[in-house]
Length: 193
Image (cartoon, rainbow, N blue to C red; front, side, top):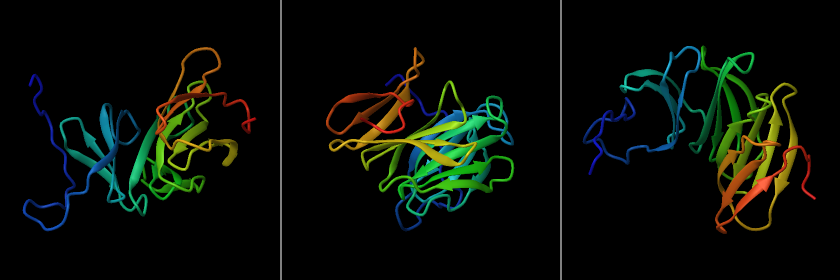
């Protein structure tokens, strides 16, 4: 192989030879969140923790019990495009949560889904909008300023597994599902027709 492991990160409490399965990472992203410095690695874990490390693997901080059944999606605001720096997490419990990066305290939560959140992103054009998709076959947009849902779309078939946003024209959302399709969503429509 052409690849070599540069850094390996494991939970700080896990000891080699300990009984039980090692909690695995279920979401990961690079970010420059406030209180963590440039080029940090944020990770969401099946044990419900959110952990922040340097790219060299040095632990910086963690949020314990961020989600009861594990963290399944992450995104972050660096504070440059929004008024504050935060981490947004989605859980296997279907809840979206916002965390202050400097204090690691809960800012808000939105119980929007009935299944694991599989995709989470801040809108490119309007960073106060948080988009999420889930295995419950729904796409939800929450306005972080008013702290309420502003759009919801649902399909009959195909649980969603990932989401992205086009940088072109209307900044549509894209989702991919278990039926093998990629769907484009106009987020300016509050409800699907």
